[in-house]
Length: 279
Ligand code: BEZ
Ligand code: FE
Image 1 (cartoon, helix red, strand yellow):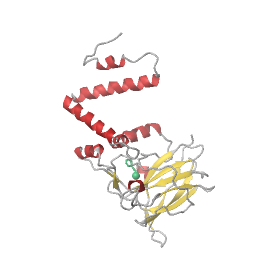
Image 2 (cartoon, protein in one colour):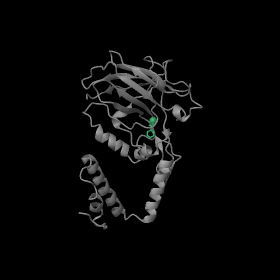
Image 3 (cartoon, helix red, strand yellow):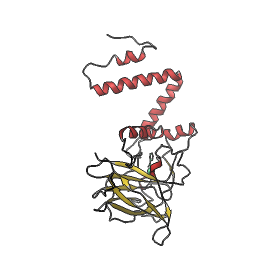
Image 4 (tube, helix red, strand yellow):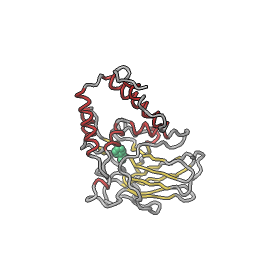
């Protein structure tokens, strides 16, 4: 039975148009989306001028997207939506290392390096030795784990943001654990940096009185056969932006020690074990 549109029955009018033989999950997701979207407009009594601004914002968000720039993911990140979807899909047992936001700066096929290698190729920053083990929930070492790492340089930029300034693969590398489950590499103590804020998402943050900074962190993508993929960071514990990360990525369990060693080999040492969850 078709239904004419009214303000009161707006949700029913739209959802009643769905066909009978459509994908049931699509029907469930779209029906809920329409319900909550209409409730939002009614809740704030959305004006036509406000909706026009929103359409212009979304248009600009799409227009700035390219192979290198994904403004919609950035929008999802600053709205806490990326972290929410990640949390819903990665509920882990106690003791397992938690996930956090992936971010736009991972690059596939970074060089696989001998354990202990230096990934900082531009000679900038304070050296830091990152080391620990990849283990299961019982503390057993995981052999053959792939530890893919990336961070910004001392100026707060990833190599892909400065292809003409930084050496290719600066502050990136892949390490494969041996039978002892250990990983180790030499990098720099990361620094805090702003997410790309020269587009509509940056303007939105500005209007909302929010800064665009992320607290200093080292990114990890850890994979091993028989275990869930771990997408995470370790954070530097004394960072100013720890409690106001622009993308809500900080979790207490991911704050790592950064010990000042200055032993002639390295200035800092950051030990951290990654505990993987079986699939
Ligand atoms: C990052 O940590 O690299 C990142 C995460 C989300 C948005 C922008 C950058
Ligand atoms: Fe990052």
